[in-house]
Image 1 (cartoon, rainbow, N blue to C red):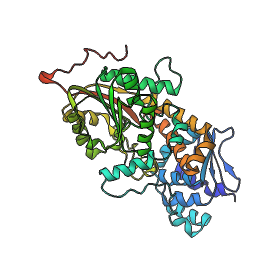
Image 2: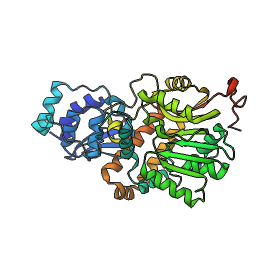
Image 3: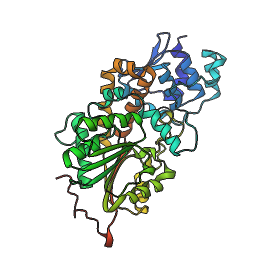
Image 4: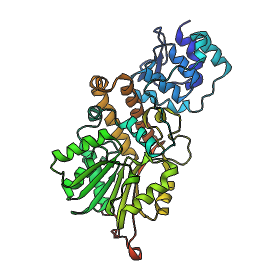
Length: 417
């Protein structure tokens, strides 16, 4: 009997009997599934079964994919339509017996995880552990990130405004939107928390005459950002630091932006995070917090021990937007505007995946095959998550009220004009 026929009951238990437009091909060349398919899940080795049995669900599939025991030929997005079926998998005695018959007794013993799996130590969201978590994801290779992100080197949701068709223009449109919401004017001081490779601070300084400070925990990012500041002739106007936001002590600032960093803060630190930023702002100053969020208690959020947590964003946490708004206001801010950019992030992620796939050989040469596979899987899965509403993203604009409650805000939002 072919490998796929032997595996079929097990796979149907994991994924259901209807695979849609997805076929499955096994290491012996046999296959099951529809004709004219959009994608094929390729089981390259019996080792894949071992990973699925010992870590059933998302993590087992993720480990098998990273290790090359499972692959996806064709449209990865079509294959990812099956991902939600993995969340509540429970193996039956018949599945364990079938695994032993197919792969031998070793199928019941966990295989060593791929070396790229994060292994952080210490207290969660301590400064030392946060530094290690950031290094795991961001200190990979600036050249790799340039292949994926493009010339702007911006690693957050772009704004696909009317008339914008390229990723670079969409990222600049996002930074300009943030600047308008913050009301940036020449001579103001801006703090950009989690400044990445420096896109926001450079634009604010170059286009608006702002004095900007950018802080990041990634040395790779800081090195690139500092060089780009010098190259742009902005060295006297922009300061890039390797610094934890909890250690910034040179306020007050007129405005604070935090774009794509918030996911690393953690629920236990939300109050401290917003209180710290409140203390760094002058009365009347504005905060723009741009962060990924989750729907209320759907069960489909970043979880500890899942693929994203182990391989992509260790210790990352997503929060429901109502919870975020409450935390902002409890810190002393007044929330003035909340905007969802969910569909914009789906389109951004698809652009990044397209960049990665079109530069696949160069990406593999730069960071290795396993890590390139991690990025392909996580970005494609994230795109689908934003498209179907399982993941959200919001910009939350708040102000630190001045004396008498004065906000200095326009009567109605004026940043879309």
